[in-house]
Picture 1 (cartoon, helix red, strand yellow):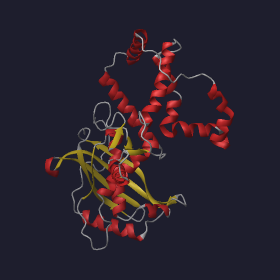
Picture 2: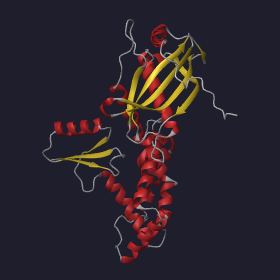
Picture 3: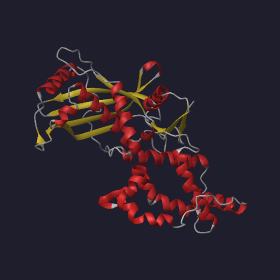
Picture 4: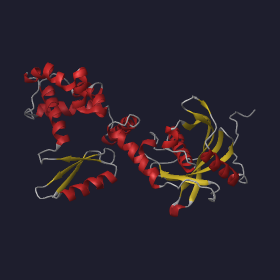
Length: 364
């Protein structure tokens, strides 16, 4: 027997607790862990079978205390949620309870924390045994939650929850904390799966290049259900990353102090894109010299059968090659320079897109 216990909403939250039976093999546990890892979930192995799993046990301890505080007339449901939302909840998303208290212990960490504040744990502050669920308590809880909902339906609250969960996860991504680390891993897997081998001398260059294809991600969608303005630029950024890797600009190149910085961007929005909609980005090199790269990305919907559909958005960009150690522009190294020269030559006879060089103005 093997149990995979997810966390609601399962389509967003990555946690899945894996519990083995007495006769479950290590191989079966490893296979389950690998399966959930492939789904970019977070498989947490519960080493001992217990009632309630780990996450539910922690939730229920807090939940029982909430019931007592409401039952005793100490606080309302809103006040108790505010006590979490504006305080510890913000810390828990990235560090959890234990690392938070380790931090609170100062330079000596958890040891000092427990030695100084541990005796207070003997005080009867919390009541882990739930109170009697009387009709009055049930009504107080329900009335409080309905007041907090402010007329919003369960479906509306679920959408709000999904939006802020995504926002929190995205905010943790640059810091490589908690669920944010999984978002970074998922993005890396997507790009690795569709990677094109780096250009080598003599390769035939596609005109235009088509290096990036994906779908509209859940966190790219705004409250209108469409891809947000900033998300189009994010997608174009990934398309540029694909181009960089194609010409030989990778982690080693950047670690050596060489990279491109974008200095100017023009975006043109043509059509909306909805959640899950597949799209591909074509890339053209309009011009290149020793330090500058002028490129053009066009995003197209992908129709049934993989056929390129209608235009969604375009961007024209100017980038400068820089020496990050010196903090100034610098010529490209030979490899990327040769690759870009070959691409520019292959793209030279393509018609100039109508969006190139456009000026924003109100006629008249």
